[in-house]
Amino acid sequence: MSFLKKAVFHTTVARLATLPTDAIAEVAFVGRSNAGKSSAINALVGKTRLAHTSKMPGRTQHLNYFLLETGKYLVDLPGYGYAKAPESIKKQWGGLLAPYLEWREPLAGLILIMDCRHPLTELDCRMLNWFAPTGRPIHILLSKADKLSRQAQMQTLKKTREALTILGEQCSIQLFSSMKKTGLEECEAVIGRWLDLPSKPDSQ
Ligand code: GDP
Image (tube, rainbow, N blue to C red; front, side, top):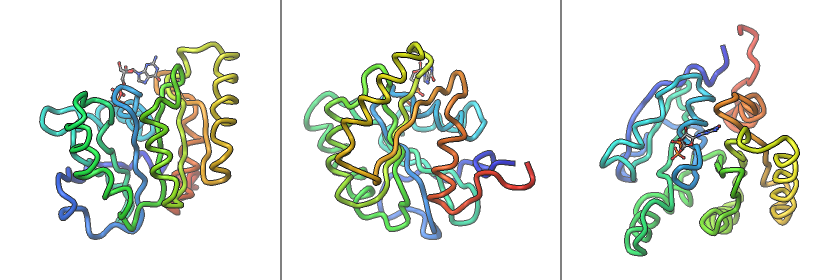
C-alpha cells in the first residue's frame, strides 16, 4: 500500500503553541481558496473526505494534520485569498500561516496548488517570493488539468515553468487532476522523497 493511503486525520491546530511536538518531517499544502487543494489531498490519500475539515465554519484558519506514520505528517494549511478585507488578510497571514511557514522546523517542503487556468496569481507570487528565501523546496501542482486541452496543458506547464526558472532546483512543477486522477504518482514521489518514505513500497 502506498504510504499516502495510510493517512488518517490527526489534529487541528489553531495556535502555534499546539503544533505536534513529535513531528520529524511534514509536507504542507497551500493555495488560493478554490484552487483544488482539498481535492488534491483527498485524491493523493485515496479518500473522498479526509481534507474537508478546513472547510468547516470556524476552521478555515486552522492547520489540519494528517498522520502517515509516526512523526510524518501532511498538513493542510488555510487557503488564502478568501478574506477580502486587507485587515482580515493581514490577520490570516500574520497569525499562523507566516510564522508556521517561516519557523516550523520539521517542514520538509511546500506543495503549492494553483488552478492551471490561472496560475501565478498575485497572491501565489507573493507566497512564492516570501517562502523561497526559506530555502525549502516547493512543488507546484497545476490543478484541474482536465479543464484544459492537452495542448493548452503543455503550454501552461511550459510558461509557468519558464516564469519560475529563477527559483532553479528549489522549485518543481507538474500537471495534476484530482478528477481524472492524473499526476498522482509524480506528486507522491516528491512527497516520498521529502518525507523519506518509499513511494513504491514492496507490499502494494
Ligand atoms: P480548495 O478550496 O482549494 O480546497 O478547493 P476544492 O478542492 O474544494 O475544489 C474547488 C472546486 O474545484 C470544487 O468545485 C472541486 O470540485 C473543483 N475541482 C477540484 N479539483 C478538480 C479537478 O481536478 N478537476 C475539476 N474539473 N474540478 C476540480
